[in-house]
Length: 197
Image 1 (cartoon, rainbow, N blue to C red):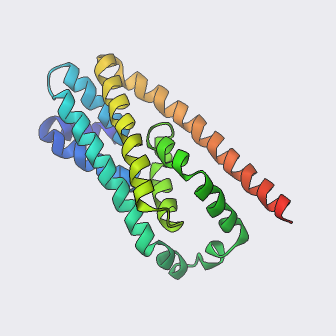
Image 2 (cartoon, rainbow, N blue to C red; image 1 turned 120 degrees about the vertical axis):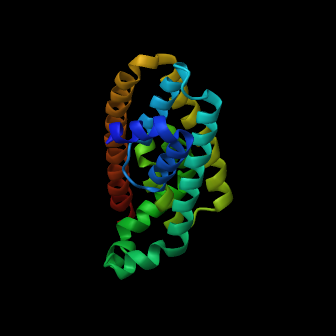
């Protein structure tokens, strides 16, 4: 799939980069981070402008995050209840998850932008579902996305021809981090439920 986007990136440049990052930030599983790193590598070769890549990645990711947050904030619970998730949303475990997420929302929003970026869209939806204050969401989203756009654009630029190796290392590391985060969340919920009884 990445090779498909790469061919269009060379032709349509920033429009493709912006679109892919926006759609990925909204929640579709497409390789936005890899494309951002590839764009950085193309900038090192003189095909693209480094600052334009950063601006494009930064604003596209913020707009995608905000869209996911507001759609979830406005329609999330209604849609989930209509498609059969009413028992989940009213369950004690989900209420525990809401409480834990609300207590740690600042760090979770910030870190899910670049440390565990694959969880970003899920955190956007959860932020909307739990009605996290939009000013708080924006503050941590914008600051986290600044690091996201900076880090991955610069990694592609610095490593140039080796960007594909860096993408693989990044994906492997992210997979491990996602598993660790999921285990922490599961154990936190189990511990909370056990202590509430």
